[in-house]
Each structure stands twice: as structure tokens, then as C-alpha cells.
Length: 265
Image (cartoon, rainbow, N blue to C red):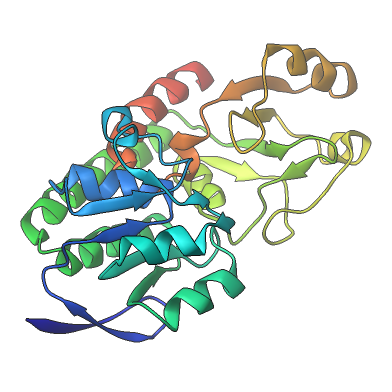
């Protein structure tokens, strides 16, 4: 049967319900689909959709999140494509929208992420599973906020996502919201992902500098590079998935962030 859904861009799509041939073009949402109990229904994913790894090997790879192979997607004849406003390129998505039902998320906060989980659950006929995931996420992040308050965690942080040029997560990002929920104040006041050299960053006097594992794969060798310019800050490598993936990985992020908080107080 056909059912109508409204995505987070306010667009109404009509899908054959429940969908049987889904292409997911966002890694965190791909992982969510599998954690909701789907399997054969997910026919196409991106080359970055590495979780769960056993599913990755057996699925058609439709390119990267920002460079999709449109012909390959067409060959899969999807009855649903699931994407994200920030992670996918507008021009490519609009081409797909003209040919297939495309449901888009638009996420800036944990609340947005939980809404997305619920809406994707409804979209693929997995509402109870989505509700359970949201229960775990809500409980976990409530405890994280409580812990941050109890231990007086209130540190200024810079979160680096790229090198040459250095780029940082700013305001109006999901990363910024996750930092705030853990008692961390972002020193970057600009929106989105501004460029900043290390001398400028030093003037902002961060207590902490987080070097993310993605999209740029910061390693141990980069720690000293930052420390030499900003010796007053504690410079740490962090798992980027735990700050920026907004699907079911948030359940795993709770434990990671508990451990991180312990290191900070």
C-alpha cells in the first residue's frame, strides 16, 4: 500500500509501505536502519557506511555522501532513499527527488536526532524499536547532564574537524549541542565550521582542544603540533563518531562520554 510522510525539509513523499528497497546515503542513518532490525531491505549504502561492518561488505556502494553514483542508485530501483540536508549535496539530492521518494533529515540537536529516529522508525515500520532506542538515549543523556552538573564540569573547548586549513565545529551544529550537554562551552561563536589558524585559536584560551577522528583523521603525531602553539590547553584525540553520528550510535556514545567526563573532573 502507499503511505504519505513529511520529511524534515517539509516535503511530502509517497512510499510503498513498508519500503523494501532502501538506499541510505548517510552513515549514521544507515546504522540506524540495521539497528531497527532491517536487513535485506537496505540495498544501497555509501562507502562511508561502515557500521555494522558485516552488513557493509554485502551491500552495493553508491559512492560517497557528497559524490553519489546516480546511475548505480537508479539501477537499484529504490522505493525509498534516506538522506540528510548537511551531509548530502543539494544538486544531487534534487535529481534523485525528481525520480524517487527521498526522505531528508535536518539535525542540529539531540532532540532533533531523537525526532529523526522516531520518524525513520515510522517510515520503515519499526516504531517500537525506534521508541526503545530513544528511551535508552534519553535516559543516558539525562544522566550525562546530571553528572556534568554534579562534578562542576564547565570547561571551554575547541573541537577541530580538519587540518590545512584548520576547521572547527562552531555553533548551530550537532557537535556543539553534544558538547554543551556534557558541560563543555564551545569557544567558537561563529556558525557551522569556520576556518581558524592556531594563533587565533590560542587567543580564545580554550581549556581543552579536541582533535576528532573524522572527517580528518587526527592522530597522535598531531597532538604536539597543537600543544606547541597552545601549551596551556589540554589537547586530546576524540572519537568523532561519538560527537557527530546522530542515529543509534548515540546509545554507544553515552558510555564513551561517561568515560570522557571522568577524565575531565
